[in-house]
Image 1 (cartoon, rainbow, N blue to C red):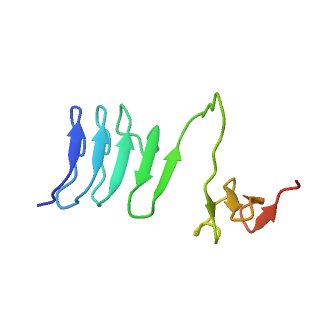
Image 2: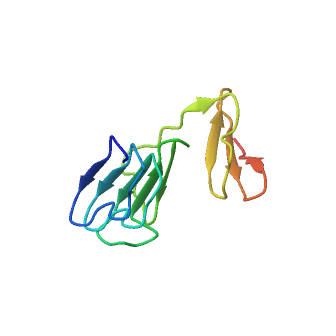
Length: 110
């Protein structure tokens, strides 16, 4: 009964019955997903897909190595992202950089 889902690959979104706004790419991507507004890029039914996103929370998780070959651009915001997890980097509107250690935001030295 869900709508606005996109699925490309055999058995993608297999368990989905009511969720909406999902994108599944790859063999069995999102196989066990039952919710809405999710992104899965994977070639198995793994619970930790190569790329997972939550459109409602504006978040993305990459379960593998990331290489940035040219530059990294951070978008400045007035307030730190919430909820925050260890390893997140945030730039405030004064262009100060902060790192989240799993408990709190720590300003990085200039």
